[in-house]
Image 1 (cartoon, helix red, strand yellow):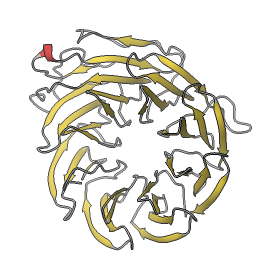
Image 2 (cartoon, helix red, strand yellow):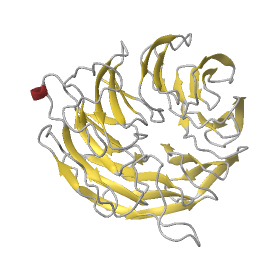
Image 3 (tube, rainbow, N blue to C red):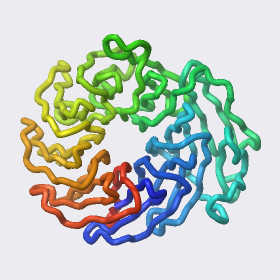
Length: 387
């Protein structure tokens, strides 16, 4: 199992025992969740780097420097990884070639631009094997797409901004050649994965008397030609993937940071109003709700019969998929915002109490826990016998 921690480290653990297989240190907290593809782990860090790490050895393959922290997780497809940063940009990087790691942690030697406002690969070898940045799409009013045919020394992103906010914490979903993601500029976007050109964007309104637009940090789910996502303006949205037209919105009484899970015609999502909701995707009507003891930042996972989701009340809940009835809950020592992951008979999740837990999927019985040196917001990814 592989996951990140607020102690700046990426961990790989044995699934059965919870023992450390390897760990990799970044230069900042890790709130991003790892993506694993073709033997490589991709992870963002608050140090502003997006890393590629060998999944077996834990050795760095390369890193890409962005102007701001990276909380978005990567979507990998056909040798390209897509992710966002807090400086309003969604990137497409070509990663089909390998690269050498920097000579030492904290090195500021890059093929181009290691300073503020610059970005680039570190210590690639050889340079000719990398195409580098395929494109970079900016949110907020500019919404300009910057295309690079190769690694261009001295490339700088624009310093002129229309608004002080607009980061991309939402992790992109790639379906049918289009990328879907939200932004803190209050828009939800569809972007062509090949060209980086905008297909459409949707401005997300605030609730009732609130003025302006509202951030979208929720990561989308796509099913049946519809994209589902939450907003901090107290709604779950259903939007047509082709036209960007809203099909329905479901109101909650708190922000929806949680990312929806769609299964068998139902969208499941948590809210800051302390509830977990099941919403019929055909009608946008509530099927059931379950109230926890605090805000729900965690996103749901399912084994086909049970919904697993954490709450800031410090518990992981197992709920019946059809009825929302509680099957069991497990109490950690602090908030559970990490999204759980299921492997065979075990469910894994992290907590603000610094531990990653392994529980019996059916009963909630404790199996083992692993301690880090800080809170765990990152959601684990499964890789063979390593968590």
